Amino acid sequence: MLHVRPRQLLLLARLDAHRHLGRAAEAMNISQPAATKLLQQLEDSLGEKLFERLARGMEPTPYGEILIRYARRVLSDFGTAREEMLALRSGLSGALRVGSVPGAVPELLAPALVEYHRRHPQVAVSVVVETSDVIQAQLEQGDVDLVLGRLTDGHDEAKYASVPLLGESQVVVVRIAHPVFERPTVTLAEMANWSWVLQPPGSPQRGRFEAAMREAGIQTRLDIIETASPIAITALLESSDMAAVMPASQASHYARLGVLRTVPVELPVRVPPICLITREDRALSPAAAQFRRQLLGGG
Image (cartoon, rainbow, N blue to C red; front, side):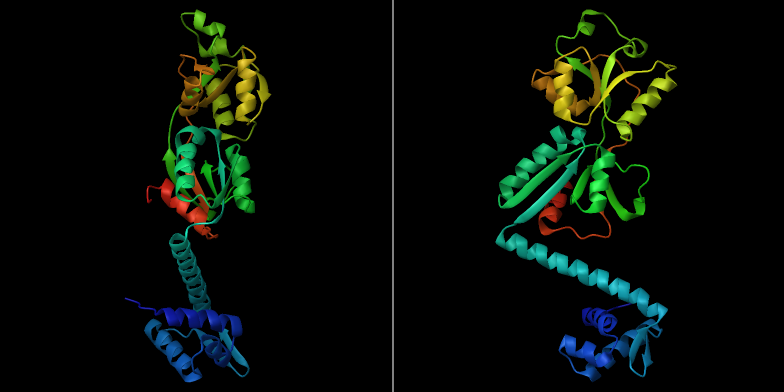
């Protein structure tokens, strides 16, 4: 079993930066013979040469380049852990930027943020509520720290860590006094003639809703207003006989407020679970790392 000492990892990082054993040793505040011994011990344990000794310095071999990448990742993770420990000791501060789909807000995001803010009042929290494709683009650009949503097509899944947190059905909602509740039953085919408020194309919910209508043999062109804004959706529904599709927990939230009501019809729309999504290649800030732990049940 390979045992690599922390000082050897640090030496690899310094050698990569300076490409000179003497300067790497100086940066570590050790003697050059001590640095030579550390490197020799590591090469002996691996059975591979990690650096080529040149007249004016050193160059990593292909094996050395692999281990340098590993060393930098370990040292970066250790530095992040150290920052988080110091932050927890002194009280978290800084900023937390969360991107979320609307369906994650009532049951998942809102309760978590209330508890997080109670524990860490010095952290400045901002929330963006959008469709999955929009907030995943913001995560890619670094505009948010983490996302509660779904991985969408066109993104390299290997670049993201994704943990499922919330799976639920989709339902049709309308205003409380909608005339549909005066009828004994209603079918999906009849609802195709209604006017709808739907999320823009590209969102998982919109694509699956339209696919479900096609699979049900409904070819009617839908009358649609497109928006991802929850407040726009609820305002349009309250002011008309339009209908919308939303997760069951979000519909329950509006029902408790006396704003919307779920139509008693089975909607054959299955969307993937809402996931906690972060970038694999980007370390979270202490504030974001703590919120991630809380969402995953780690305190």
